[in-house]
Image 1 (cartoon, helix red, strand yellow):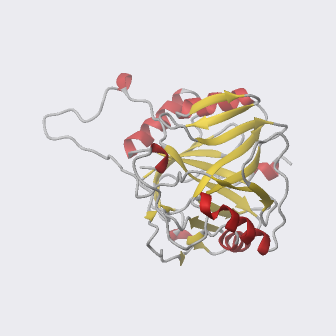
Image 2: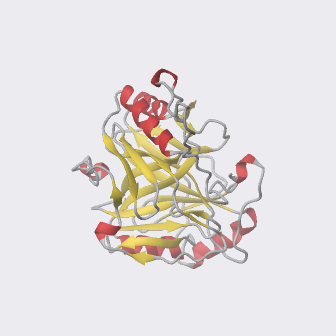
Length: 320
């Protein structure tokens, strides 16, 4: 249950400065209609908002992401949420670390402050409600007793609709520098990593095993955005609803090792992915997770099909 539903207070580690959520992100793509078709099929509440598309989940008022139109696909910016009483302290902290504050992108209304990370990505820190979960998300992998039908007929199958944004995995030139920057500047903490190839970071005020992850590449870019669903059944139904709409390329069903979530990735029209994710590990605000550095075979997936040959290709760099 997240704070935006209004039933529980936001979890918090007292006296610790750190972002509490990945509040939203923006991606630029060449064709907004393609984006509307893809994310609508994926189960998102896609709203036309001026010259952009807003990505919402049904039943929530929060905008998890936005999509703008441009010459080629590109991750435009990342926005992180902080508590209101931490905002000014955060501004002083960021400037005190020698990071230069810059103007927001033209035409964008912002209550936060902006800077660039180690790779040049635009980052915003803004006052926002905590949208990272305050406890481990509820999961319903249910069975039925004897003499009852367990599966619905396909003609009556429910539409998979994600509950919230889970995380982003972005490409970086240097995983070590990514971990250092996002820990030192944003207060995120390392959950797990595999050498200089990939690293996962969580929020100190309670979040999933990772709210952002970094994979080594020749440059920055978006690998995937991940969306939380309530069961393995919903992952499977989501994969089928996407295939029925012509979006059959991807990877899954499988289960990751680091984070432990069940997954199915669907390739979008621009070479990145959207992931249905369920039952990811959770790090509470009062717990210090024991971060590890794991061999490659223990860092990717424990079971599932072989991933596509180009699964880790950074198409933002490939099209520049």
